[in-house]
Amino acid sequence: MIKRSPSGHLLSAAYRKPTDSDRYLNFRSEHPTKHKQSVVNTLLERAKNFPKYVKRTLLLNGHPQWMIKNKKKKQHNRSPEFKSKVILPYTADLGKILKRILGRHRIRTTFKPVIKLSMVLAPGKDAVPASKPRGVVYETPCGNCQHRYIGETKRSLSTKLKEHHRDTLPRNILKNPEKNSVNKTWNPKWPGFQPGLRPCSIT
Image (cartoon, rainbow, N blue to C red):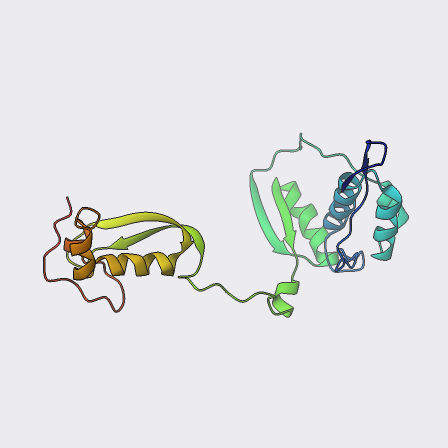
């Protein structure tokens, strides 16, 4: 967070949300050591102006001093070159043995956690229905031919489809014939929509 001092100078300070719990990947969790070291490296890099706060937070999450001091720089050149890759569930003892054996055959081994929090905890947000997302590009087929209409809207998809549906009503076509020159002959293939009497003539 950037603040301006009374003298006009810009000062940086760490801002923590009221709901921040300082919880990160615990060192005693069943994850590869590489994942834990990545947490340490990321925090030290992102908050390098506040090393004391980062070190205290990492210690609270069980990370030992040797891992905090053993910050590794990102390696761009990786050797040896691998000819293939395999992703396996992580187990502490067996995983290291498999990685060593597969490495001899130039196979890169990547591990993933066996159990994730998303498998245990219920999602915090309700799923958004397919017709409710905003800022979408949509496609609607015609019920009479192979033509399709592709449109874009910043509002919800259901609102835009209702407007299309309303524009196809005879009373609205007569009010604005130029705007609805296509709608009067287009029969959108939507659930519950009653197609018009004229055949589609989109060209």
